[in-house]
Length: 66
Length: 155
Image 1 (cartoon, helix red, strand yellow):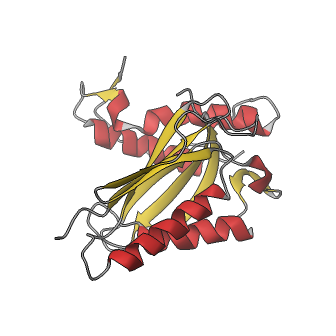
Image 2 (tube, one colour; image 1 turned 30 degrees about the vertical axis):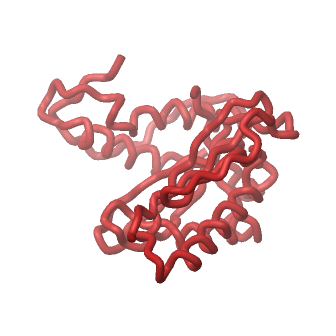
Image 3 (spheres, each protein chain N blue to C red; image 1 turned 90 degrees about the horizontal axis):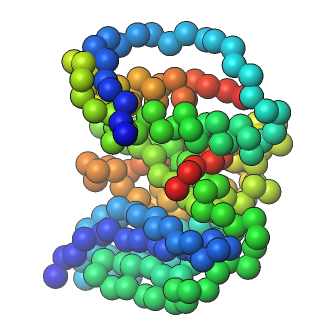
């Protein structure tokens, strides 16, 4: 089941999350995050195309640090 | 006769679950065949040093070499869900790409940045060099590896 694309292109914001303190748990979190960066996981609903929506999440993933 | 430079490598994990890696080389011709095959061989050998998966087949252009399709990796830690996520760029088209390498060898994680592979490690550096020598972007341009991140996937 894909997510639905939106119609805006927000800038990134830094937020705080809590994750298990272990390399492999972090890798699984990043793997789950990675799904948002794949165009095939998006269905166009707003004006953003799946490629555009995925690209914004890719910027967020690249900026995410452990 | 020129043929596609598209090549693949297939590896098994410890449970004999297979994964396929795909590479886009320059178009193969009689003039560059030997050089391209050598470059692909170097790349596949380099990948063998950063993954715990077992190579079971490879293709080069329209030639397929099958080695041991049902043989599992000898390493229990070889799991295809553990990936190296390779980020690379086409500096001409200014476009970003990614590829995944299954069965990441986690001994190669950077001690100072444990979400990523140690880019100074000799095995990682050899992969980067071999990948940049063989692989091309969708536009046919050379590529540059930017980072190699450890990710867990639910494949």
